[in-house]
Length: 68
Image (cartoon, rainbow, N blue to C red; front, side, top):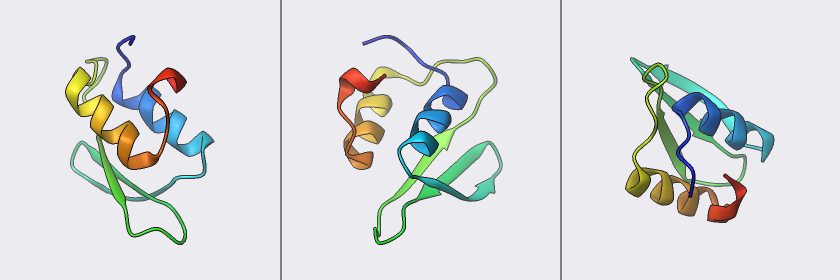
C-alpha cells in the first residue's frame, strides 16, 4: 500500500460520496448521508497518514485498500 497524505485521502473520500461536515483544528470530519459513521482525517501538511490509521479509515469508509 502506498503512503498518502491527508489531503489525498480527503479527495478520495469526497470522490466516493463523503462530505466535509466540519473542520476542527487540523482534522477534517467527513460524513455520508444516511450513515452514522464519521471519519476524521488528519491534514498535517505533506506528512503521510500512518499505515494503520489509513487502513482503519478506509475500512470505516467501506473502501478497499486497493483504492489508494
